[in-house]
Length: 260
Figure: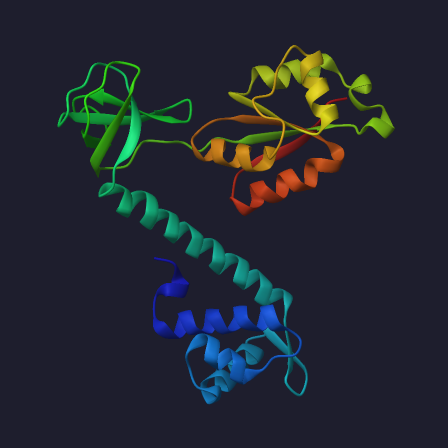
């Protein structure tokens, strides 16, 4: 479990720090107390402790600001909470709900199957040969979608990585100054190719590669990498920041390179 959820005091301290960050610099302890569900006196004590720990600094009467150390702590704790929520929704609740998979063979309703991830999609195969299993809720022919519930175990999945290939904007030459061979080589190493920006789409097409999507590249790449795929995002330089922001938010490993 995330450290911030270990006990009520840690959770309250986290929530108060979040409230300060949201309201700074003019901080009403009464409003925070109402939002968090504690007394104003308790909020005052927590704030004093946060100041002593260097996570919050006082700028004047009822004026506080979260320090860099406080921001770093919030980011770290928020990441832990997000991972815990993902564990609950995917691993815990996933075991009692129904999901869909692609049948690799003909399957009957009520059959035990082994689950695996291929090309970013769940597949169900007859038998219990793998680490993750389930029970089919429908019959299906090979290649059809099949309902699965009663999940046990964890699907063996190595997270993928993302390469962000910078493509110059049109004012700097756009796709015309791109090394097509470098783009083609990057495409060959990827399992999924997406684009962000018109120049990026054209650069991929010049290298005989059609992007799977040409918008929301960072979000798509993050989702695909989370499903085990290695992804290439060809992104116009102006769009690189938006792509990498989405990847960082999803805690996805990535590297940025140039195509010229």
